[in-house]
Length: 340
Length: 288
Image (cartoon, rainbow over all chains, first blue to last red; front, top):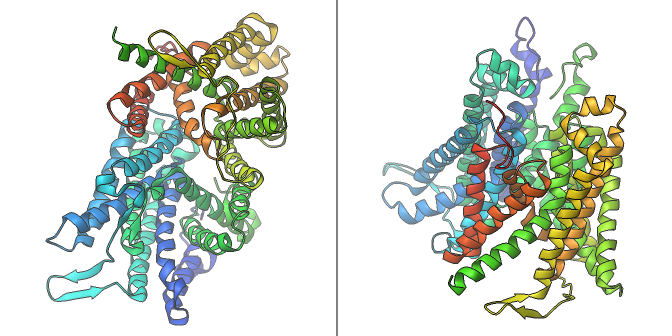
């Protein structure tokens, strides 16, 4: 990240030298893609972008706050089930709106309660990982065992959403391209918000907590409140993204919230670069795409390669791809201001 | 006492000791050198598969179990020597590395042994009658073995020179090193012992469960909760108390609902214990 110098760099310089430029370029490419490509890629990409939103939420939590969660997919699955239940139980308004709102609120609230409960007592970050691991196991088990609501192993079918505004407007997102653009708009909005948050005072305090929790505490900041808030934001975003994923995929099964998918998110973020929102986002899309492609081509070896890649990143390149790129493009003089 | 209550107690005792066996390796590694070994589950699975392969190769039960445990210990030694020992001062990275070890090992197991379920035949297939309940002989023998193993570890820990060294290391690493203790070698020994115990546990529980690539996963979180609830570093009492609370509660709640639901409730309870006694139930509270 840009180590804050005495004067903020101009917009032009920021676009060419930092992550912002790459972000604008990448998102512009995503916006142009349906013009050039059609078919399966346009169908599947929104799902990967929503995975990417979950990855960004983890990048905020882990990369900024130093709090690792093995349970983000639990929230994601909660969102998808919430969306499905809204289609079943909310007949009056547009069920998709209700689903998105309720998912956001429920996910945020749940994470806030869990975070408050644990961080207030000063539970160590390693224990927090174990608790979130248990959370994702609980999420999967609840989804399996409450089969009269969730459909158990058989999963739950969910309708594709429409955009409505009163009786006047009704845009069906049933086709791939409109859904693609809707998800893209959501992604841009989430990225913008998270980027702002990360560079605001909030994000700086978070980095401080990651680097030296005791010092930030002694400076008078309420560390546990910051951690709780971050976990709540990450939980709300993951659940919200999960709700959209549910209506896009049309189906949700318990394994979406399970341990294996939860830790896959950690693998994406580690590879992309835990301190880079964009890196996490692009890695989620890239690895998901590769997984889809290679698991048809070399089904037995791909998860092994991914696991080894994860190990290599943790051992040799803690900053992931984004960290390596930032180090490579940066001036040698500022190279020491490193990634965490 | 009604016969339901007696069978409940028997079930809880057997599950407690099975859990204690499965958690021992983790209790040693996590409790003594503070490595959060997320690869513990994979080590159990490896032990079970090595057991299956050894039995198939015609090796008798007991030597096969020792061989399986030694194989896992060797893998643990490689992991420690080539990777982990460089990260002891960054505990959070050891957590991630051992998780990566879990991911890679699970995939290699799938490649080598396949994904279908394997069975290790029980050496004691009969059950004996206690008068009020029939107990599978193998589970009972395993429970007795677990108790012996715990006592043996306690003996090493509290009555030998090596035990004194390890306890010194746990109490004060710098001071122990200044007094001439070889810290690196002791860490290595503890990690390899933990791997051996995990492999042994995997080999010995294999006859009671189907052997499949994710079997250790079921034990990973439970083992961590056993160690944390019991108290980190409380190898003997902590592991027993933790196993009793986790396993006993699971048996108890399973009476009223399904096994899955019982496990969910127990995890939730363990999180609450973790919140209020993060140092475990057996560790004396330090003055706050």
